Length: 277
Length: 232
Image 1: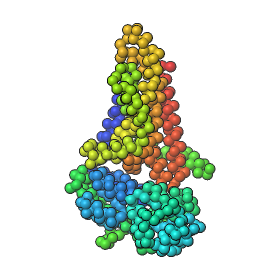
Image 2: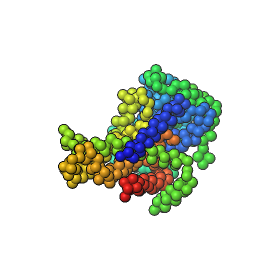
Image 3: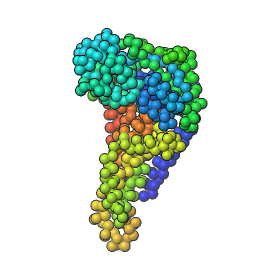
Image 4: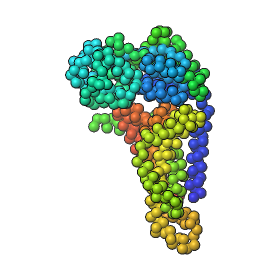
């Protein structure tokens, strides 16, 4: 019995040590609620060591999808949100949960689908493409998770004159998961799917999928960053959080973002200087 | 088949290179799950034994509840712990959401019912065979309980390993309360989920293979140590 007591106290000591190291690093560590696209594309893996080196700030990233990330911040569980759905971000600000929104960068969405292209959408504009997918009843995978990409997809259906909430058939699959999971499913079932370009470029399980629709102005995808309002949640680390934001939109941060490439291809285009973005 | 071959190759080379990221992930997985299962055992074993040995009012209800909780989905526990630890929740001021401590709490809650149910079952059997004899011999009930626990030690070890197995294999709860933050709360299982979503299936499977090897090592080691400790 004494031996098991000794083992137990050892583990309690271990836990306490764990808590202690947590507390020590606390002030320079911020929680950033962000989207699956920034993580799955590898941007954060590349950017965070640079942030740590230049500013001393340790960033803990939660990759959640825009809707969930904003909810996490509403509960006060994040210091900064870094997401991509301007309408949802402006609502967040209007509710008083954010201090100020800064545009950071953009990339674009692409419509990905099987190489043999059963709905014949290759090279079409995105609205025509979605109408063709619907008319042919070709398989389409939707994120269905209130993420930035899902919100963008819903807007595109609307622009195509289709009320997808009412007017969907068995060809339309809402999976309620992240971008990677949606791409995996599209790859396994030869479906069409809307993806951000970054995640698509980093994605390894492509199967027969390829990019079919791109370059349409409506496929533009803007990312913004906001400090969670310390007036709503006093636990927010406003000093470190604001320093992280300031670095992202500084010349140095912007050129670091531009420097992130996969196979020589740039994934994100910095545009903090564009006040309208 | 190609995916499997590639996964095994990747797993071997990952272990061979002792990749830093991998080492962090493995040590976090082990320390979180071992700590959680030890705490679960420390809480659950006395409870399970007491339920077997003492006459406690509402005892059957306790046992039914413990057995029912065996089937509780980790994601529900994760959500409950998340709401408790969230800044907007009752324990928000602790600031431990998205830390390993939050993960230990969630996995401990998952482990306790397993330990209670399994220890109870073991001790009930042992008590049926030896309990009365020990009491007739003049041992106090507490003294008899210790003896019975010693006789049933293999069952106790199984209970501990079952709790550890559930903890180390679990992804739903720690994903929610830990957040899968690289270098902080990323474990084997959440890393597997992440690599799967990146479409790197063979890498994800390689991590899975390493996880199985780890699990087997822990199980083998605990059997070994229990034999040494118990002097067999």
